[in-house]
Image (cartoon, rainbow, N blue to C red; front, side, top):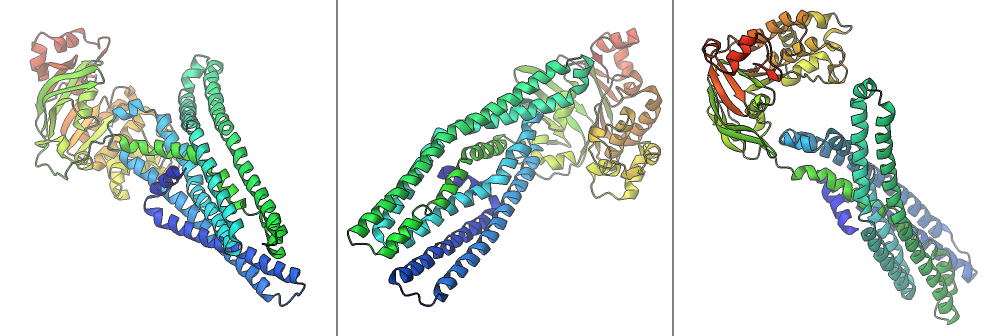
Length: 575
């Protein structure tokens, strides 16, 4: 139990001081609460003595107790709430920042649902419960301890019995935490699976409907929901017996205190007023401790949630020893690069050079490694062997932000954020002015259709840019890259799925983007690559041909065969 409490304290980060203050204020509140028993003791002394004197001391102590405890509870609750929200917000920001520097392979092994569950459901558990749990568990213990110490000062024998009850209760609480330690992580895994299944169901709805599988697919989601419910119930069932045992311990010691007080009074070693005090106090003494014990039932779930959130920190990053580098040129070089996805080798001993301000086209059959080659330039992954050079420096020498300042990428599948068009264009350069955004949009041939929208540049796009056509999204993506004005441009099949009506405008946008830049392009249209300074033909992870269009067309090989057929071969995607 105390291990999880320590973990919560560590999770608080730079909010630990505020959390510590909250616990100190909670303890002060416990001291004020204990004053009520002092007032009760004074009142009983007067009643038993049959001489009711001035009531001001009793009333004064009660007022101090009530006001002090109320103020302490108010401030402690505010501080623990602030701690919970801020420590989780910082953790979410930390996870978002760290994901930028994690190899793309992590996202293959950890699905969108998994990551989404961590930053939403998992951290929501921590946000709403962790700080409150820590303060209530420790505060409840300290509150009861303060009462017991006051009782000890009044009647040491009964005080020791009360403290023994606290120790037995804590022992049972610790045993219960160990007993249910397996249920917490299992419930956490079920929540992750639930989030993943629901996201997959929603994102794949068009496919589900097109095949008429709504009912069958819904069964998968239903099973996942039921599994999550079963895990939650299993956690509650594992907690329930121990909760009953804890209550039994409290009741037994309350009875022991009552019986002991009566025995001591009968023996003449305890005053009547103190005996009456114990009869009243015995069943109230452990109230805060019980609340702390009930709250402690959440500890295993919280521990599993924090472990899952912290697990992202265990993933190696690719920006440990990087430096801020401003390259003097933008030559790109591959030197004996080998790369694999797991056990599948994608690139095998690939070497080539791309001089700055030239255009290089990558062609080859699907699965040949073209996109992987481009992604290695941007260091989405690290190579298995060899090195990728940008501006005369190994990409591993750069800080990732420093490297990406020199590279703009335009993908075939464009993703636009659920924000205004202007903010989507400014994504690569957040400090750009409105005039600069308009200039970039005009160069990318998207200004006219943006102005035709209801709110112009302030029009909010749907998630993924779903309110725009494919060609429109592509031009907004190019406007984003133009505004960033990076010296290296990577085009990954940027015109592959564009309709003929948009092709001319899109090509004009690409011409504006690529002027006086170092260009690496993957495409499947001959006219797009025939004027490239060099063409690399990639097949099975190796470069099988290289040269200009005229040189390769005169050679007997894959490129000439494609041109000879005058159409794309099955499985081919040419740059």
